[in-house]
Structure formats: structure tokens, C-alpha cells
Image 1: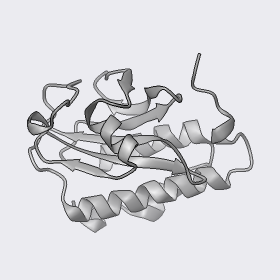
Image 2: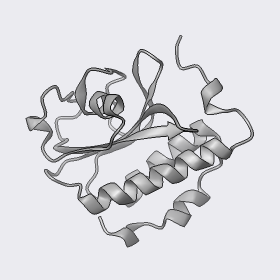
Image 3: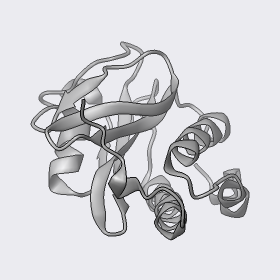
Length: 161
């Protein structure tokens, strides 16, 4: 991905600060602007596992245990994980057989780990180091916008039943 593929200011202008709206718009924006991806979305922690949140793409796995998959690993390690070939990742959870590579970025709101951004591609080795840096910057903008919102705080939202 080239840095001029989309403008971070354009992305920021779509963010209201309200977490649910922002996760939806963020997913839709990246799905539209980033080439060669087939799924973009969020998984949020309910304290026991990751649960499907706003996304764009085919229907997805709705629950991911912290101990499983690329998303669970990135969440547990609190670090971005780039997987060039998901077939070679032990424990990969296959929601879409067309997905071949993946990047997962932890989502921290007000310095609290709340979930992950997951992006899948039908191309092996789709995500570069430049992509990682750029997407991490986009996630920081999202996090800051939500953190600064004076309305409903993300931390007060309960994802559990």
C-alpha cells in the first residue's frame, strides 16, 4: 500500500468520537480505500473472549477465544501481527477460505486494550512494513478520537450479555 492511497485527514473527518459509529465508518473507509482486501473489521473484548464488532466483508466468526487465531494472538501480545500466509499460522481461524494473508492491530482506547482491527487479503504476503506503520497510525487516530469524545465513553459500554 502506498501512503498516498488514502488521506488520513479524510479518514479523521469521518470520525465523530462515538465508538460504534467510528468503528463502522473506519471499517467501511478502509474496505473501500485499501486495495486487495476482502475483510476489514473489529473484534472487541468482553473480558473473556473477542466478539465480532463492525466490519465490511463476508459474514465472519462471531467469537474468538483469546488463545486462538491471529486475532487472539495479537490481542494477548498487544502487538501488531502480520501473517504473510495464514495457512502457515498454527491455530489460524478460517472464516473465509479466500483469505490468504492478514494484519491484526491492537485497539487501545484511553490506554486500555479493548480489541483488535483485523484486515484480511486474498493475496499471500499482501501487507508490507509500510502498510503496518500506516495502518497503526490510522488506528491511533481512531483511538484518540474515541478517547476524546465527551459523550458515551467506550469503557462504559458492556459487551457481555
